[in-house]
Image (tube, rainbow, N blue to C red; front, side, top):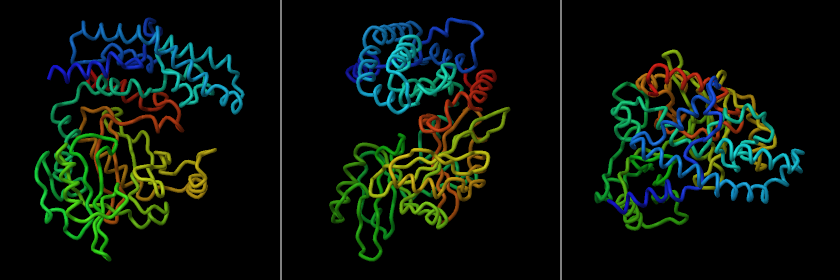
Amino acid sequence: MLSHRWQQWKEHVLLRPVPHTLVSWRFLLPFQSRAIQLHRRVFLGAWPRLPRWQWALIALYSSMTWLLFHSWQQIYFCMKNRSRDVAAEYCVPVHKQLVDLLYIALLHGIPPDDFYDYGLFNRPRKQWLEYIYPHELPQWHQVLSAGMRQKTLHLMTDKRAFAEHMNEKGIASVETCAFFARGEAVKADSIFSGRSLFFKPNTGSRGEGCFALSFDSETGQYQISDDEKVLAEEDILAEINRRIELQDYLVQPLLKNHRLVDDLYGASKLVNLRLVTGIIRGKPDALFASLLIPCVDEYNTYWWLDIDVSSGLLLRRANVEPDELQVLMQRLGGRASPFWREAVDICLKAHSLFPDLPSIGWDVAITSSGVKLLEGNFWWGVDGHQELNGPALHTALVDVYQQGVSSGCCR
């Protein structure tokens, strides 16, 4: 136990190359924008389960190592590896990039890589603190979801309990075929049933640990999705048992796209809709949306297509790569996502069951049997939504969190 805790401290504190939140001089000034007030709240509320003296030590250590070492190292490598390309493509002088990197890194605690990833060199400085940055995201969600009830936390982190709860409330979700507790021995007749199955860890996110067991009705053979060769059934069973020794697994049918989705996107694997909802004036509303279309011949890799939440129309992107994605964007830009209204309605209905969470990221599938809610995440990733739409705190999301703070939902 002691060694595990030490390992956590070493990984998350002592050797961490970036601050845990933004650390900005603007936090010291009164009458700041709502975005800066939220960043300051996250900074002051970080590590909410620790005594304040431990928070102070972590904040001091993290800030000092950042200011004295990590920031300079990262500025150097960014200038070396990225500045010339930006100067050539966007006509931003190298010396201006250096000044801006010093400004965001030393005065705001923003990693230099984010300056380039979010194209801040093309954004006015007043917008830079309207972004939510990846290095602060864990603390961001912890602090601004601090009013979450234990029941909500359980349902959001336990996929089996979540699916059962959704079904009880009449919200269309994916049926559960089986549940295997960690270390439980899986028998052949429980998985080799003549249909394709999807295995996902009962806890976790980002699709880590997920895999499919595909069944070919013509050959009668099974194959694990992330294995290039077809294995014998006894080998597949041994591999599945090996994985279940590590964590609990929920087993669901391997879903298929609705024919309209297949016709529109030309995808043979399941297309996911990511929809973020937030509570505004006491009611949930749609904030951001993206489609995740599986890349051809690449396992667990997706193309992100942004959706206008007011209309459901797919948004065009300029200068996208690779060429296949350019062709797809040209064909799809300006067309509506199938079953958009139904997808929004199911997410809003689901969010109404969790009024203690200011924002939730939902995964939805448009299947052959209709719209299905896959899962909800209160630790949803904001990166993809900011790449095209700009800073998240320049949208209605700032109202979501500001109202949550005022109502005590984010206390």
